[in-house]
Image 1 (cartoon, rainbow, N blue to C red):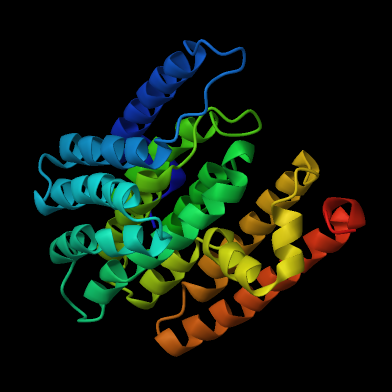
Image 2 (cartoon, rainbow, N blue to C red):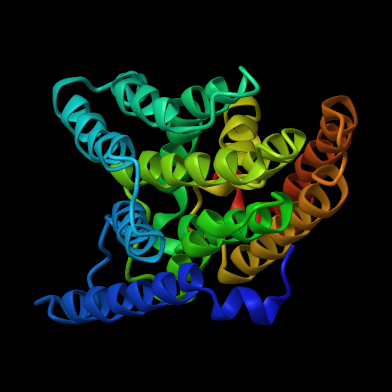
Length: 306
């Protein structure tokens, strides 16, 4: 990986940062112009990030595969439309498949399973992140955790041009989501954000394919917490309780950062997939334990049944 100074000076990072800052100013202005007393929470963070990212890449690189903006456009439109017709969240995930397939066609085709590394995570992770957002969007955690995922992916893959652009876009926008939330990933944005991350990581990790798996797993608690909540009734009660405090949110951010560091620094460097998966397995176990520690620290007051 190039030095941090070289990365900061690169066109990919600079243009990403320019558009990220522009997006931050625009979102703040729109949020502050709300007629309500407190700033409006805008549910378009993921769409904004994906759109600003692809524009920055096009300027920095001089060209971009036309399938990428088409795929992101499908992800931005089809899941919300499906949500208006069907009540099941699964319908939104199914509606994300055309966009995922389109993005997979733009991803590297070797090794063969890389196509699946784009096609499958987008609807599945998008579904889980949307569920995460239903509980935590008012705390701004979705955007913060996604920023951590992008940072972890940047540390994971050997070629960082696309992922460094995404990181540069995400950094300024994330400051609008915590501790005072002005923007959330949103339904469409959950799928768009994962789509942008999948394209950036598969392109950047093709020289060391095992790093692609590690980079995508840096989504961490965004996808682990929804599964754990579905399994544990008590965890569900605590996570949806109004008594869940900002201290718990801060502790969750620390736990996400720890998970991302373990995966990106210990799992991603392995050249064989088996070793990468082994480290990820133990990291996921540790994440589940961390969730239960958060529940224990929250105490009975956060469980509305007690």
